[in-house]
Length: 152
Image 1 (tube, one colour):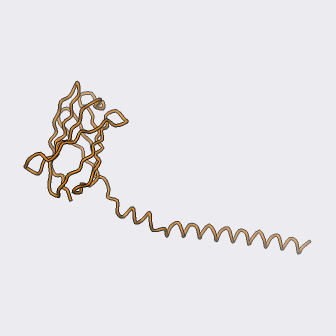
Image 2 (cartoon, rainbow, N blue to C red):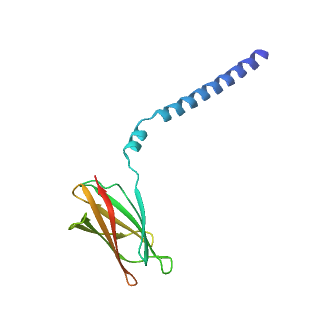
Image 3 (cartoon, rainbow, N blue to C red):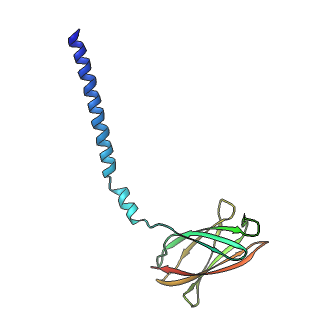
């Protein structure tokens, strides 16, 4: 009887030790995986800005601008007269070379949430640009000319 007790105790201890070893090995393996770290190193954080006119607040986020690549602008618009989201607006982004001529226009599409709009902007050449946001619906017709957009 004593022999069986020791055998069971030893087997249970061995199982616990083996389980602990496998758990530690799995954690070490997961921590050493290189692909998620490599992807994270190449991703750049979105740029966020908040700008105002007397009538609207424009909080927008966009991917860093790179020549010839599409950058998504996620635009959150608020009517400052009553604090409500700007509904059913036509939102156009007009891109101009710094102090120069118009390069392109992009119409934003209405997002899934009221007051949010999404625009895909692709500027062909490196340089400094200005972007004008034109927001128009039945209540609002606002233009917001913004500077300091750098395209790498």
